[in-house]
Image (tube, rainbow, N blue to C red; front, side, top):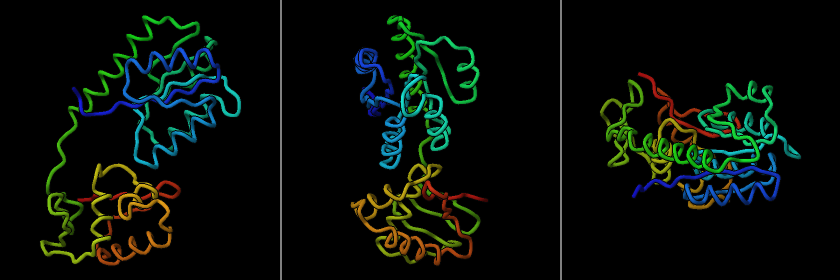
Length: 237
C-alpha cells in the first residue's frame, strides 16, 4: 500500500451531481474535500495550501454562482502553477475548452456523466499521481544552496564556506522548514506551525526570526520573499 495520501477537491453547485461525484471520488482517492461554488472552492484551496496540504486533483463545474469554474482555476493556478484540473459541465462548449487549454486541464467530463469512462479516467489520474511520487528523487543529505552556503539535512546545520553558522533553535527550525521540499513556497502559516506549533504567532515575531537568519547569511542571502505567498530558498551556483 502506498504511504502517500491522495487528495481531491470537488467543486460543484448542483446537489445531485455533487453527491454522485463525491461518492465515486471517495472510492478512488483517500481524501475528498467538497465546495459548493468557485468562491468556496478557492477558499478551501487557499487554506489547504497554507497548511501545506496539496490537492492532487481539482474537479470542478464551470457555471457556478459567486465564482465560475474557469475564474477559480485561474486563481488557483496563480497559487500553484502545477495544479491539475478536470472540468465537469452540462455545457459542451468549445469556448470553455479553448480557454482551459493553458490551465493544466487534463480532462473534460460532460453531464450527464458516463460513470464507466469517468471511473477509468479517475483511476488513471490516481495511478499517475502515485507513479510521479514514487519517481521523485530522494532529497540529498548535503544541500548546496549557493557558492557560499551548504545545509546538512541530517544534522540541520548550516555551513558557510565549510564553517558552521551559529543559529538559535528557532533559526534552525526556520531553515529546516524552508529546506523541506526546497522548491516549494512556504506560507507564513506553515512556518508558524513548523517553528512554534502555533499559527497564532504574530507576523512580527516570525519576521524577527527571518531577519536574524538573513543577517547571518547577508554575504550570499538565499531566503526570498514572494509577496502575498510566503518564503522560499533560492538556490544559485
